[in-house]
Image 1: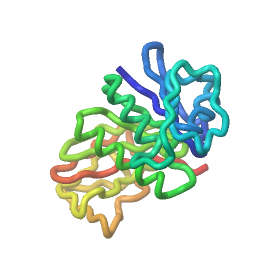
Image 2 (image 1 turned 180 degrees about the vertical axis):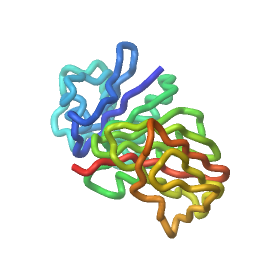
Image 3 (image 1 turned 90 degrees about the horizontal axis):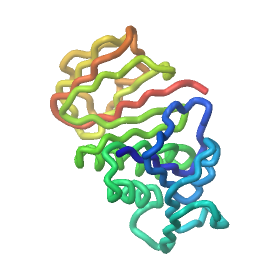
Length: 207
């Protein structure tokens, strides 16, 4: 089963291709309800402390209100609800606009999902973010012009990229020196391989 989690923040709906199908669960985190509505979508579940969404909507079947004093963010709670619902793939819409602290915490969710063998992706229309560790990934050419590899660990070893403007072969990326930035897919796809460590694969476009 797939789940779509709608978080708060700025999005570019016309640039987002990821849309739920019948049978996909749709969860909004607080003001993410407004972002869901930009797609004409009514969430199945709304969760949060509602410090951003000032009035509760009447069209959501299930509303879960939590105390403002909590250990997890609303987006983290929404993702965990998706996991508990049996989601094997989770798309987080937004969660990266505005505050950097929220953006980093949402990106870290991808690591947690990966460790639980759940596919995760974050999209806001300008960026699409995935996480990869000790594995390979085929990145298809898309409407995103650039892609970057960001080291999530102190050192990421055996990094190779084929089918791109700036190839790498068995290189080491360091968290303190992020140099694998603004690459471009040169053909139909690029092959990204990592022998040891975790990276964020970030597709982006100028707006």
